[in-house]
Each structure stands twice: as structure tokens, then as C-alpha cells.
Amino acid sequence: MSIGYKKTLVSFLGKMRDHKTYPETSYQMPRPGGEIFKTRFLGMSLASHLKVDRLVLLGTETSMWDNLILEYLKEEGKLDFFDGEDLDSKLKLVEEVLQKSLGMPVRALRIPFGKTESEQLDILNIVSREVTASESLFFDVTHGFRHTPMMSILAGYYLEVVRKVRVKGFYYGAYEMSENDLCPVISLSGYSKLLEWIRALENFEGSGNFGVFAPLYDQEGIDARSLKDAAYFERTNQVKESRNKISTFRQKDSEISQASPLLSLFHPILQQRTDWYRKVDRYEWERELAFFYFKKDDWARTIILLLESFYSRELINRGRNPDLYQERESLKQDFRTSEPDPFLQKLTMLRNVVAHTKVENQDFKEITSPERLKSFLGEAFKRLS
Image 1 (cartoon, one colour):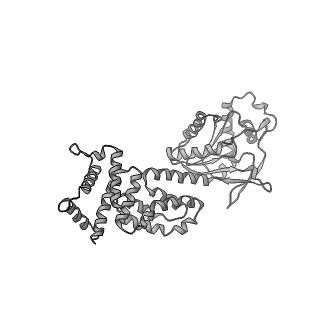
Image 2: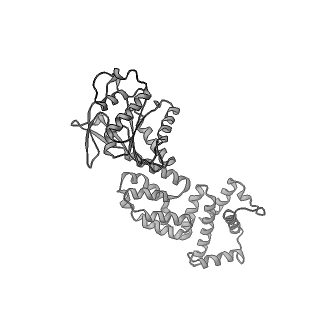
Image 3: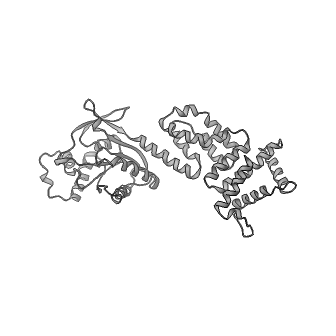
């Protein structure tokens, strides 16, 4: 396992037929800058260009370790010199030769071919053992098998979540796209960003918290402070404050739709989630939010927001201000004493159960199963429609 490294490049070494090596190629980095490297092995030049602290080189038992050694030893001749060397010895020699040439620590590791699920997970474990939390990782997927890019992107996704590393980029030297004797080095960062959004979307789908998108909007150049605030206020049941913040953020809809292709994919999801702010009255905001959490099986939020929606609607119907604490408390007292409503009383008791924990002398058949609770809450939504 690495200790104290801040930036690491993970590169792959492939195999050519008939003991051939990679052709010497002029690789051009993505613009701006567009630095050009003339090399057979892009990963070594990338390590220097990216100024990483070390290089981790992965290859199978059939990868061209011999060719790599000869390239950097500047030796000529046949590969007979290595015929008696076992693979472990060759890997150690690769580390020594490259460390001397690149001026940085190098790890040369054997990985399986990745033919089976077990072998694919073995590769992930090998990479995982080499990284530490908060380390920045770069991947070079120029060489290796065709499934290497997919495997690397998924490995990066896994390592960010589990090992808390930061994946900074994926690079691919696209030899088949060469023009004018220059091979473009393509940054695959778009796929990495896409995975970030998908991960945030999964989080959002599970929790309903749209605040998880705020850092990603920031990365795309959209100030998302109001979005983050809106999520906080909603999840602390400060509905009016949340609506105001959503309204502020949604004023940027036109700007956001043109900001990046990623936002054009994901912003409509946020728009649909926050469209409740367009409703006119407070009871409608609370009802829409209650229904959203109802669909998420978030019973506590559903019950709390439903009850507050009943109070808000009644205050509006009576020409009173639903935003005033005193008005809401006065109405609650009326419903408890002079104007009892059996259905609303039951909803209030359920609210107390989910807010304060059910105790032995509380016996509500509505809360004994999801089906019964859904039926009761469905009736409550009907009364609010």
C-alpha cells in the first residue's frame, strides 16, 4: 500500500503479436497546451507531464515487460537476454529501470486477464491495495485490453466511494485517430463526470435530497448556494424559506440549460423535483412535498407535511396568515377543543407517533402495516385535493 503519495498515475501495459513492440508515436495532449511526446509507451511520458508522485504499471503475464525493459535500458538485440528470468524478477527490474529513468517510485504489478467476474474483481482489489484516502489518481488506458477503459472508470468510481480517493482524469492515446503523424491524447473526464452525476442521482433517488447536486452545479460554473440552502430548508420543514431559495435558483434555468451537455441531461430532473415552488399557496407546497415523500415511502416526512398542509389550507380559507406561528397554534387548539375533527385528530396522533416514537398505550391499526398506512394517507391526500 502506498504511504504519503498525493498523485498517482495508473497505467496499463499490453501485448503485441510476434514479440513486436509498440511503434514510436507522437502523442499530443488535449488542448490548451497540446504538448507533444514521441514515445512507444505513453504512460511513462504522462507520468512526467502530470507531475505525479509515482507510477503504478499494470500488466498481465503476457504483457511486453521485456520490450519495456529494453526500451528503457537502451539495449539492442533479441529478447534472449531475458529468457531465463521469471516474471517476478522482470517486474522488479521494470521498477528499477523506470524509477531511475523517471525519477519517481514505480510499482509494476501483475494482474489477471479479466476474463471472469472473479478476475475482474481481483484487478480492482490489486488497484485498491495500492491507494490511500485523499490520494489523487490519474488513469492511462491507452494500452491493454479493450475492456480496460470500462474497468478503469468503474474502478475509479469504486475507489472514490470506498477508499475516498479523488480521480482527476482518464487519458487515452487514440492511435486510430492519428492525423498528420500526430496521435491525439483524449481526456475521458466526461465519463468520470457522468459517473459523478449518476452517483448523485442514485443518492437523490434514495433520499429525496436534491442538495447532493449542488457541488456538481458548482463544478459546471453555476453558483448553487441557493440550491444547497433550499435543500437544507426543505429537510428542516422550513417550506417557505425553501421555496424562496428554489425560486432564486430556478431564475437561472435558461443559463443552466446552455451551460454544459451534462446539465442539459440532469437539470430537467431537478426542475421536475422542485416545480412545487410554482404553486401559489403554502398548503399546496406542503401537499406536493408530502406526496413526493409518500412515493419515497418516507412516512414521517409525509405525515408531518400532510398535517401542516391541512392547517395551512384551513387558515387560508379563514382569511388568516398561515406563515404566523401564533395563528397555526391557535388553529391547532381549536381543532383539539371547540372544533374536533376525528380524521385530523387521528392524523395528529400519527404525527406524534412518528415524531416521538410509539409507546405501549398507543394502538393505531393504521401504522401496523405499510398497506394500512398507505390507505389512510391516500384518504388524507384526497381530502386535500
